[in-house]
Amino acid sequence: MSAGRRYVAGIDSSTQSCKVVIIDPVTGERLRDGTAVHPEGTEVHPDAWWQALTSACTAAGGLDDVAAVSIAGQQHGLVALDADGRVVRDALLWNDTRSGESAEQLVHEVGADEYASRSGVVPVASFTAAKLRWVRTHEPRNADRIAAVALPHDWLTWRLLGYGPDGSPRGADLEALTTDASDASGTAYFSAFGRAYDAELFQQAFGRPCRAAGSPATDAHDVVLPRILGPHESAGTTPDGILVGAGAGDNAAAALGLDAGPGDVVVSIGTSGTVFASTDRTIQDPTGTVAGFASATGGHLPLVATLNAARVLTAASRALRADHDEVAALALRSVPGAAGLTVIPYFEGERTPNLPDATARLEGMTLANTQPEHLARAFVEGMLCGLSDGLAALLRLGVPADRLMLIGGAARNPAVREVARHIFTAPIDVPEQAEYVAIGAARQATWALTGDLPRWTVPTVATMHPRPSGVIAQYHARTRP
Ligand SMILES: Nc1ncnc2c1ncn2[C@@H]1O[C@H](COP(=O)(O)OP(=O)(O)O)[C@@H](O)[C@H]1O
Ligand SMILES: O=C(CO)[C@@H](O)[C@H](O)COP(=O)(O)O
Image (cartoon, rainbow, N blue to C red; front, top):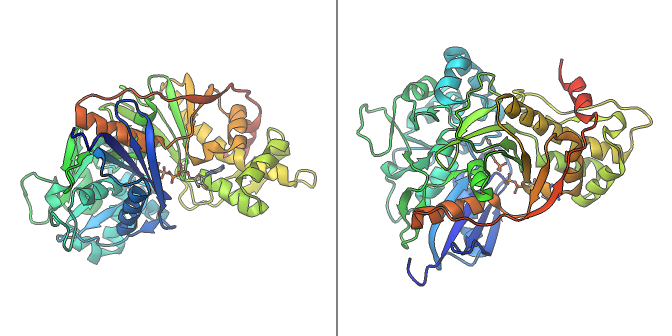
């Protein structure tokens, strides 16, 4: 490491924004950070992520003193490139549900058991394979132009390395695309067990053969997929000489940032709600509730994701004409069960349960309970009950939950923390508020740089003990047939 470049950087290119942290790799001290927003919507031109990434790096004081960097990103999004490295169409994001029917077709053609045993997942609208099938069916001219398929973090890593179309320093070399197992395992054409692409599952989804970047072409119609790097392998260096790590899916990076160990279950409440654990055990769930993703450390990351999380509270703010703090204060004045009100929070359709076309509902209204405080409470409870069902699914598969670690933007909310005690069945630790995805990426960058995974402390600022009440039973009575 040169004297001028002493630090590492981690980048989280998430759904709503890009966040950068600059860290001292020896002490783990967070020195600087920066953020920049992403556009709204479920299809986004990747250039907007690149612009946000460069703005966030500038806001963090630049990378002149950085020796290594890794990018973690929102998972599953389809970045389709033509032979000249140009983006074929706006990226379809993980929360774009138009591919619900395509996912159903794939499960019908291949079988849920077969999918679970080969790829560790059963396709839903979110997964890349379903998006590829959608493009093949609905946009055949775009499909014909596709020469390479990448995920958001793969494409950003490629850009950071100096690749890209039209005058990029290193040209548009598709053979230089890289990814890691944690993100590749969210495509539904990758074997999280064999750590390689499943070419048959890709062909089934897209109707064309594929190959990993850098491997010999076998067919003129091959689609290039990013080369899979090991957890501490490097993707190369930027034109300025900064080492670039493999990167990861955002949830796998959060597990790395939190140093989640056996018995820890992470509950992340960002745009998505996710419940996941880092384990050596292989998980296969043919019901599709739990996705058997790979972790960023060579193991597994069983995960349940909901589409409706922090933005449920944004909807509450809009409905009640109150900011987050006011909604929290209202919710805390109500009682467990919101006096009988239930919000079933499928505002953007839902992924778990698999209801891509669903809408949200408010149930149990009486003259007595139609009060702002009960309404606020019902929004918080509905959002957390979806995640609690995710935890139950992990427990059913034998994943231990000695403690929960509550992170993500909405974990800041005091009502979320308090209501969580009435819904979850395990003790809940709230780590210090920080960007754990970006920290995990920085930890990975250090690993690539030094060969050692550093130990950085993660302070806990609050521990809540569960106080189970009838909230979840009321929710189930209204969500289960
Ligand atoms: N105090 C709060 N109460 C509720 N939601 C919050 C609060 N602070 C931030 N958020 C929400 O958290 C979300 C951003 O969280 P984050 O984990 O950064 O999401 P993502 O990684 O998906 O972009 C936004 O939807 C924002 O409105
Ligand atoms: O789809 C998933 C996980 O399977 C999501 O977790 C995305 O990875 C988006 O994450 P956020 O931007 O909400 O953090």
